[in-house]
Length: 318
Ligand SMILES: Cc1cc2nc3c(=O)[nH]c(=O)nc-3n(C[C@H](O)[C@H](O)[C@H](O)COP(=O)(O)O)c2cc1C
Image 1 (cartoon, helix red, strand yellow):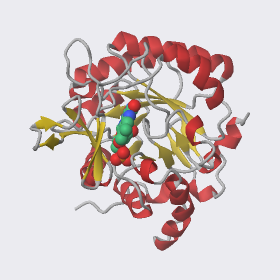
Image 2: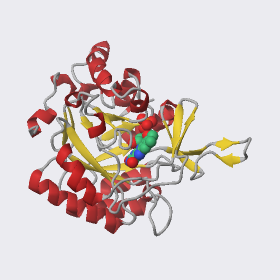
Image 3: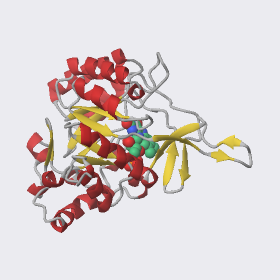
Image 4: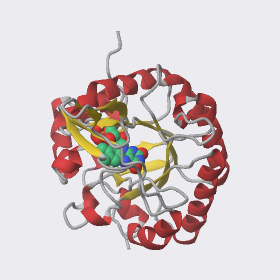
């Protein structure tokens, strides 16, 4: 069992970052849905080198997800319509959490609910489990999922974002992360609502809505018709959203979208991210996140920087 100190002590003290109440040994995490429940990766990736991991989203009840095909490759990216396929909260508490407690890095549990009440119910049960035996360094709300009442994703509507974060904040005492959707005209209303309701950190962003067409058969490729675009193709768009949020809000931001190289990491940090999550790149190189940690000190040297903290949001704004 790793102690809390083991989970945050940096090999290189220059790399440690503090995102409000969330302390990480370095700013490189893996993104939800691209790293399984971590167990699958434990034999391949030296988890003790990572800043943190985010297991796949869990929902209150088990879900079978969307009809196949659920993944298709696109130029410099991929589209997925997995549909939150998972075994539900009870299974997570019984099977995954005991293992995650042994993982030598910070674990951020990601949840999605169909309603604000469901989010709060899950958060309450996770808070109880954490009070008993620990293991959860933070709770990330997947607000890029549809709410049952209105159909639109929670984070498309800032009042829904506020309602969910508000309800969860009342029952979850630890670090709270709100993961927002990029499928909005401006990221600011949902970002501001999440912060006002008590989110400690913003995770920006989830996938961009897209579709693929099989023109010969004249059908959509994905069983669900539309899906979420991820991978290098989305980096400029996600980077723009991080930059715009960092310009207006003092809250710590985790940048997510198309990160696979050290240049990507540095661009996000300089543009306003305090840490990053690596997603799709895990599918073509499962150990890429450790490589990025290895390359970070050299990149700091290039800027003459003593620490990661020093370069966050250091971009010259016109
Ligand atoms: C196959 C797949 C499954 C995903 N599942 C989830 C999920 O369960 N919960 C979530 O919050 N994000 C999920 N995501 C989104 C990623 O965590 C990330 O926000 C997004 O892919 C952008 O980062 P990337 O370009 O590095 O992949 C998923 C992404 C992919 C590609």
